[in-house]
Each structure stands twice: as C-alpha cells, then as structure tokens.
Length: 237
Image (tube, rainbow, N blue to C red; front, side):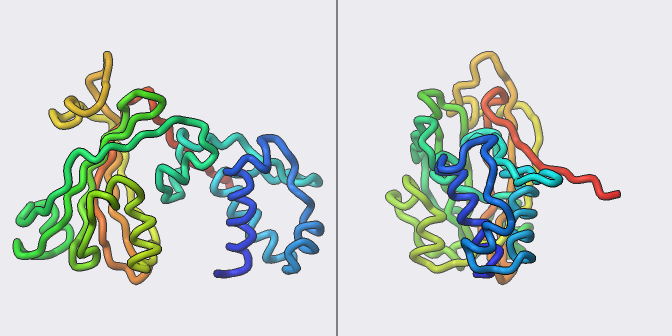
C-alpha cells in the first residue's frame, strides 16, 4: 500500500469510528509529518483524497476540519463500501436477510454484458435490508462463477466482499454506477416497505477487479425517503 493511502485509511477509520468528531480539527500537516514520518507531499496527497471523498474540509491558513459523514446515509458516490463498513459506528440497527440464492444461465442481459454464451452461469443473490426495523433496501447481485465459483448461504448472509477479499484474495478495484428514480417492480414491492411510495431509487452497478475483469453486476433499490447520495465537487479556476 502506498504511503499516502496508509495515511488516508488511518484518518478515515478514525472518522468512521468516531475518534475524530465532526468539526474537530485535524493535526497540522507538520504534526502529521512527524507522527507518520512521511514527507509533506505524502501528507498533502492523503488530505486531498480525504477532502475529495467528503471526510474533511481543508481551510486556508488553518488545520483541516472533519465534516459530518453519516455512515448509513448519505453514501459517498466515490466509495465502494459494505453495509458493515457504512455502519461501523453502530449508529443504526441493520438486519440483512437472504431471500434467494441460486444459479442462472442464459439471461440475455448478463450474456451481452459479460460477452458470454448461455453455458456460462452466475450466482443470483437477493437480499433484503432492514434499517432500524424498516425494510427499505432490496439488493439483487449476479456474480460470475468463473471468478467466484462458490458462495454459500452463510457467506451471502454475512459479508460477500469480506469473503472475496480475504478468502479468495480478489483485489476489487472500482465500480461503475447508474442511479435512476423509477416505479418499483413486483419483486421490489413484495420486499420493501414502500408505504405511500410507488417508486424506488435504483442503483445499478458493475464492479471490476484490479486486472480489469468485471465480476459482479447488480442493483440495489431503496425507498426514496431512506437514502441520499453525496459527492464532492471542486471548482478549478
């Protein structure tokens, strides 16, 4: 791991764990240099990445400050996080229920996207997520079994990404996402407690390994009042 990434991850974890509170000032660049034993350029790269990802705000002539960063919502568009990582400070009661796990073949959308024939199969995993007692998220994911040959019920009920990264030693790189607001389909209506809503916020994503191979395609649908996404934009003049 690069040095600036190490600094970035350690400060980010302190924020997520509540050790650095919102509006609290970070140590100065010089203090961070002494603490980590790294160059000023390394520290500045780490702080810039933290600012881009919405964790801190750099201030002219002053130390950077920690921004409000809700761990379950809003979610940062620039990050790939598991539910347990989003809720690492246990600010919400989260329950994930596996509703189905089976193997599919010959689905046109998957065949076209992965450029495969109907002999290649995929795990289809559907999970319902309750936050503070309300069923507000429904996730359907497909995993290429050439890359992920085995997923058990136990794995699917806990953290699939923990299994992929720690057991299969896969290096997950990035995800391409599309966010739309659309009418809920029947599967979503039966799963999510939509209340007065007829629509969902739907996020489809394709996730890639570090070597460029796509290994997962899927979507998460949210009740509209229970999700927000944030992104940090900087104006360069």
